Length: 308
Ligand code: PMP
Image (cartoon, rainbow, N blue to C red; front, top):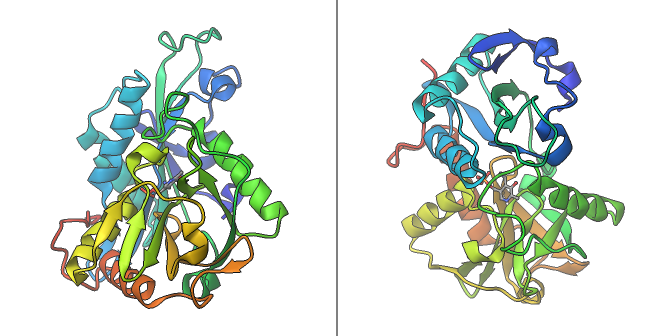
């Protein structure tokens, strides 16, 4: 994915503009202080046409993020839902990655953002498997980062705010420099938190473990889908504090995320996880997740929002 390749239209403050014209001023508050909240969603090609997966849940989280930062979005959730669907339609996508963002725009440069206007934009682009096509089947090699995720009284992790991704970037760059695909951040207590852009799950003795929302994670929508799918299979899942070394003695581990979907983890810090390849529970959950997102399974949870 390279936005420079992209053409077509971006929804910006209520109207569609050409991709090159979707601009903000360099003195906008967001540019200097990271004052933005955003979402990442996937639109999948299904037998009933394109559908943005769990669109309403993502837009709810966008508004939650904005509320945490006292950022009034000058549209209703329903209007943004509709605008996302229109963005897919206007650009003629069958499948896409969809990125709505609300940011504090151009007014004054003091730290207090309250006088700066809230600009809202929605872009959509082609984006393949985030951690690599092969990774979906064979898994990724990851490391535990020397960077922690944010302590709970520093940056609110339940908000998907642009500024949180400075921390993510440190984790990701360190991982890539060490020849790993992704890094795992620990929380303020040294327990497992999440990847730079994914939630993490560990399987041991047939039980799934994942960190709680108190461990500095973003409460992933895909994480929630994993819970539902685990329930369908009668697989127990536990949200709890997880010490780092659980990664080394796990039978299986995987990431979840809109971009990463369900990606197996085959090694951590050079230590193979289980058999060093995608495990059977990961495979089961991954397969069903893909059936749901691709519209190959009855949508019993109302996860699909079709573009008419
Ligand atoms: N944690 C972080 C830091 C993320 O950036 C993401 C991706 N949005 C996730 C978790 C997974 O969230 P979701 O499943 O809603 O995409």
